[in-house]
Length: 199
Length: 199
DNA sequence: ACCGTAGCCAACCAACTAGTTGGATGTCAA
DNA sequence: TTGACATCCAACTAGTTGGTTGGCTACGGT
Image 1 (cartoon, chains in turn yellow, blue, green, brown):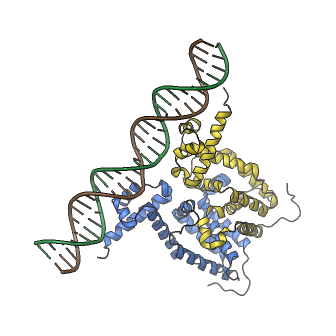
Image 2 (cartoon, each protein chain N blue to C red):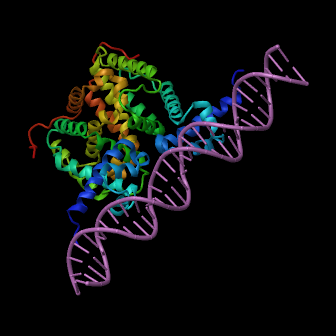
Image 3 (cartoon, rainbow over the protein chains, first blue to last red):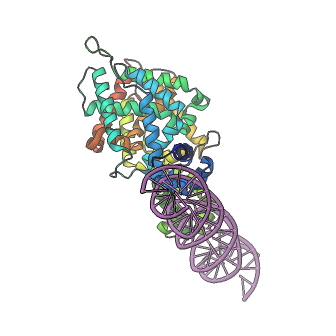
């Protein structure tokens, strides 16, 4: 029979609990017992729904990236504005930043990433949008720029300890930092004159 | 009596082994037994020299940052060149990048970081150097720029899985990426005209 | 010669951990 | 009514782990 509401609710509760636990502690540091407890579900259900700890992590990061995609529009004609709203999203969702970091540290170079095909596809669309906004054809160069924009938006949340050392109390002024990042990007990337229209 | 060569050698071997283990697996994922085995030293010596696992990590990252400081000159008048050589250093020492990431993920906001005072001091010197190179006074704004330059140099090694998704095979072209980062920085930051001389 | 100490070791310990097992309950189709 | 199956649970298992302990050896000072 089709899974009923209760099964879907169990799965959702486990994903929510796992997101918090993996964001805080990573894959090796997360505890399966704690995830189950936080979800109010038996530990065996984690294995029933997801198979093992690592597949649970994959499901968590895939879901978090899906949510990002539904909420943040493509770069378009204004990369600085794009970086600004992406920065704001990451500031509001530090768990996604941390999940990407744990994933990066766990990455061994060749194996497929969770949801790889759709992630590649989405990034290609972002690259195309950025290229159009810059009045250029999509290329490796524009993809590198897209990578740097994504990275710049992530940096403040990725390196809070470095921000603290470098900026002291000002490290808490997140909005000022976001403006600084957007200004940096605006200076680095020319806004195209005439021609291209934003979508 | 003063520690003899053998004691210093034990400590050095433990630090080397710990650097590899912590870089690869982080604090929670590292195994004390593996560190001791790799160092060719009894596990109890870790506790004898460092106290506990977390203090060992602190010693490792402090040593790695000390080495960075001895090898990379201050920003000076050419921030793009600075980012280029910093990028090259991080590309050659991915273990430092990873240690900074594990530290970031372990950071809980308020507690002192290992070697905090000297790290703050070094960053203040970098900020002063950058500010002078830009023909400005050191300020929170120049400190934010310094933070972004440091972050840009770190990005490719910090997010290899994202680079892979966004750039495909081109993700392995590290030198091209470094040039792209340096060009991005050169575009974002004006080179001062007249006035300031590089140190 | 003896004593104290530094530095080292093998073995140990108490607690922890991911994953499994045997069984219970509810639902639906025959 | 019965059987099959999905979904759930408490208890368990086999192995892991950070840190400790009791003792050995070498060395230097008295």
